[in-house]
Image (cartoon, rainbow, N blue to C red; front, top):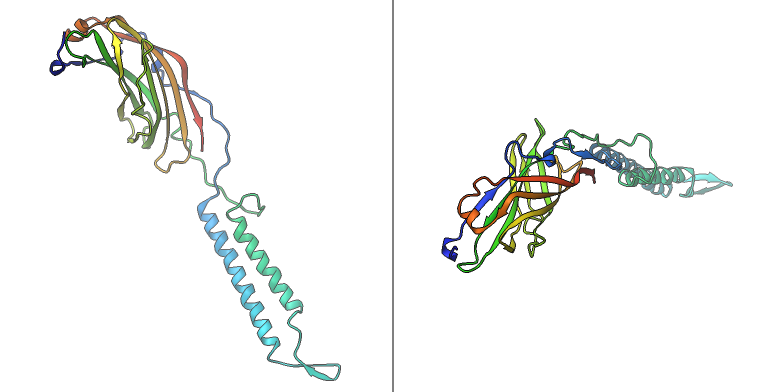
Length: 276
């Protein structure tokens, strides 16, 4: 038995040679179609052109109205100011409307305009987030006289891309050990950057008061990832079970899990979905 001040924590994870289908790095991919965003540079140029056309049309129209009140013409043997509402003003109004349309169409794709350019899609980071391995962390925080344990799971993620960093945001890391789940998900909304070839462990919340003799559990995670520009963005989901080769007891924790290994099996295959 262990007192509160003598609580111990040990890690267990799959070892070399263990049956581990889940570690396959050729993750299943289900890429959903989506529309590319408009090129920001093209959008900027288009709005600039639209603004310029409106400015020219407004200046020309104002100049025509002003000029029509400063000179006179002979009409029916009378000297009169020409009407402001003539074909020059109508042309200026038409050109102003054209410029306004170009300006609006730059940001709203449902306004058709020739030559619209889109941001090229760089798919180089797709499937870059690799599930590498997992470990189970067991502890005995309940003091003498208790045969209950606490357990949490660390999932190790790796950036399999050889040249591009990726930004990962955990949406969910849910576990249960012998059907007992943590009260909260402390890993959700954690965001971190993975450099090429580097890995990081994300730790789940602890399942409390797991009975001695536990042997199995389940893990589900959902995470979004993509390049540092956050476009395109992918969602990785995966669910798997784990089982220890021997029951986990207080004695096994104290002895450092000698001879105990962990195997994992997929319940839901690793799946990447393009979301933006």
